Image (cartoon, rainbow, N blue to C red; front, side, top):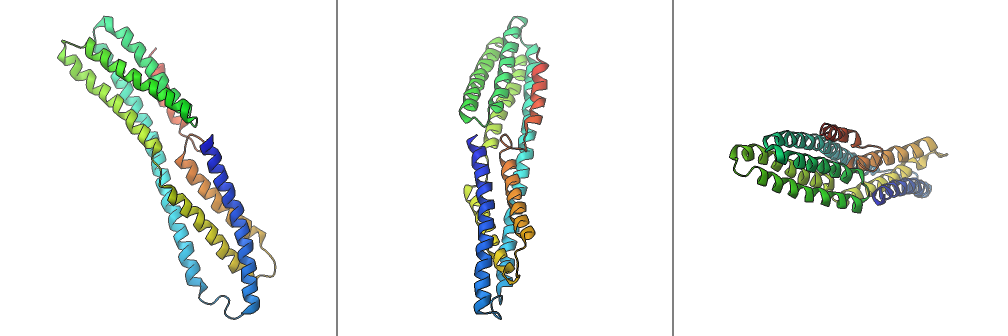
Amino acid sequence: MNILFGVLKFAGGMLLGMLLLQEAGRRLGARRLARDPEGARTGLGAVEGAIFGLMGLIVAFTFSGAAARFDTRRQLIVEEANAIGTAYLRVDLLPAEAQPKMRELFRRYVDTRLEAYDRLPDILAAKEALARSIALQGEIWNGSVEAGRGAPPVTMLLLPALNAMIDITTTRTVAIQMHPPLLIFAMLGLLALVCSLLAGYAMAGSKSRSLVHSIGFAVVLTLTVYVILDLEFPRIGLIRVDATDQVLRDVRQSMR
């Protein structure tokens, strides 16, 4: 929940800051207009265009990257389900007396893999489940090597499948931790605030405040940033990869 609270706090602080800076910019613009009606806006168009253009670039960059990482995480779930399913089917190659134990280890392994991601955003609980799954990987590997000893064709088919099943867990763990540097998000928030100040300054020439434009600008930009953060952490917010976990659950059900 700490990550979710941090995302909501960031978005809420950004919304409030944008509204306050719009008002501050409007007052600064009004004072400047009162002192210099003719030159208050001279030369500001290029500056505003450059800063708003940079803001659009950063939003596009972060949104595109977050969407790509979201799709990658979903694809890795499918790849893990396929790897586990393939390895489980190849247990049939082991001697009959070794198969029941190995199948039970596989069932426990898939349960711990599902638990590790169901526990998120509780990081400590997820790490405990992940540690159990790694321990079960060792048991499955050692049991397969022992059961297939003396039968090279069996080990040649089973061990590579187990290796792929184990490797994909590392890939998924790294993928879930892969995010842009915090400096990128800090820059995104800073640019949003600067743009709000400039927007308020630009609206200083009107006699009355346009609440639709002021609030609309702040809300739309804040929602955009929230969606970007939601894509970056798809286990804590409204945008989730939980539905893709059903592929792994289907594999678990097939192991009965």
